[in-house]
Image (cartoon, rainbow, N blue to C red):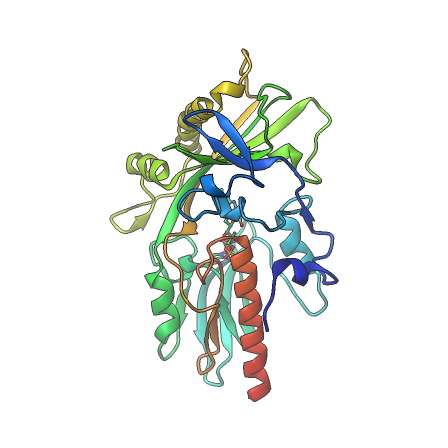
Length: 325
Ligand SMILES: Cc1cc2nc3c(=O)[nH]c(=O)nc-3n(C[C@H](O)[C@H](O)[C@H](O)COP(=O)(O)OP(=O)(O)OC[C@H]3O[C@@H](n4cnc5c(N)ncnc54)[C@H](O)[C@@H]3O)c2cc1C
């Protein structure tokens, strides 16, 4: 079955959660300060020709409403689904009959929670990396190609910057721009222009995403791991990164900035595996003998659409497997 995310959301439980972002979107040339609307900017769209996350392509741009987490929350309300929010899965043990015993810690007090599942789905590449905070220790006869393939994917880090400032401080002719000719900033958007995120307090929020090269540079000062050990990000590190990224963003937005720049809020976030530098050819991974699947943005397309399509492909494969059993 072939899916398109837009078709999937029509008439499904996702209806109303993904809303078209009918905004001024396009490409910003950081060298000249000129903005080209997406309708005319295909030529300036960088090596992929599609800009940041395909924003310069011809399709409709959808955003989660009021925020991206609404999508998962709505899906979790479907009949028959029991969700555990704030849970970290630490171990999964396959029992003799093939069922998976999944052991997680839940909530601030890290209460242990155990449940039996007929299929285990790895939804994050971190699950197979022992130095990652999302590592899941798998206990089964052999994890085979699923974990091997997952482990082979190269990640591509990014930093994001969220800033809030007085409306009209940034007088840009766009709401979202894939940035060309910048070694530091890849994407900048007026977050408050997204449906459901408007504000009436005179403040507007902007979000910027750094380039892979600049992200690597920032990580060279404060790495993700040391001697195979994960180094969590501290607020001090993030505040320091926020200042550096804000300075870089000001360079990119220079032609549109007013005199007074006083952000009321500035917060950076480190994403060690924001995108994938390489992806798998398969739409999902599925080993029926182990009842083990893997899906996410590491299959075929490293963005949100890719993650949704991969999740749907895994659901199809698992249902198909269940019918054959
Ligand atoms: C700053 C930034 C901006 C982006 N902008 C866009 C954009 O504009 N458009 C776009 O299409 N894409 C964008 N992306 C990429 C997009 O967010 C990802 O491609 C998408 O989220 C991938 O979805 P996923 O379900 O595969 O993985 P994830 O969203 O990473 O989900 C995996 C989940 O598994 C959880 N998890 C992992 N291990 C465990 C464990 N052991 N126990 C419990 N839970 C666990 C993680 O906490 C996470 O919530 C952006 C990414 C970043 C970082």
